[in-house]
Length: 78
Image (tube, rainbow, N blue to C red):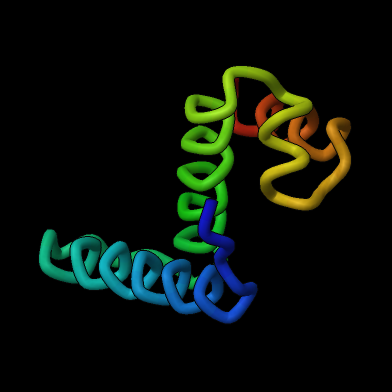
């Protein structure tokens, strides 16, 4: 398969985060940067878990420890 560079991943994440911020602004939602970052983090984690099917797989995909995924999901009520 074709490999993706870390730069390409970074650019995709930046593009997605800009889209998220734009949609939030368009909806007239006023929120802090910290809360926007938390919401975006939650979306990234949930997407990784859905794509990978396991917490371990999501952790590997996101290059974090499985306990980090578990702790963040608990924080976000999952």
